[in-house]
Image 1 (cartoon, rainbow, N blue to C red):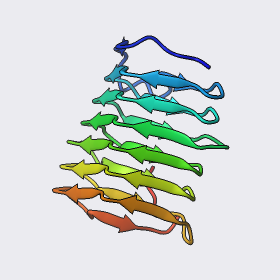
Image 2: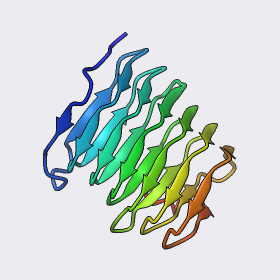
Image 3: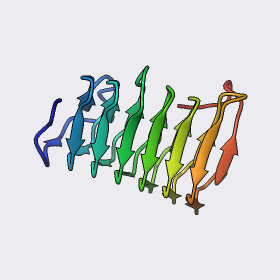
Length: 168
């Protein structure tokens, strides 16, 4: 199990499209209370059964990306503020987002985007983003939203799209 130090900050330019602030790739990895600021991708979660808790992505192009091929990946009590493209995105199955907040996204930023099957959003909030609050794609895929709030986003609050429309 990998445990990363707390309260680390990154400081690269968001224009550097390949730079990732923090990446969980090991099986059963855990990260808590880390901050990524002004970077292309704040947090990337590719490991099996990984958890991010209390992390903060500030002015990143993409706040949090979950692409684990075998889950579940958990993102708990994390915040994406003023991201340019998307606050939180899940591109593979069995990701669980709980108590997460995406707000103040700029550009065409959506709060939460997924094309994956079996993604669960629990008590999450999307507000004041330049795009959709939730963009739920992938055709006949099951997404679960429980007690989630979407308000004040510039486009749709909840947007079910086909895979060709998904912007993340």
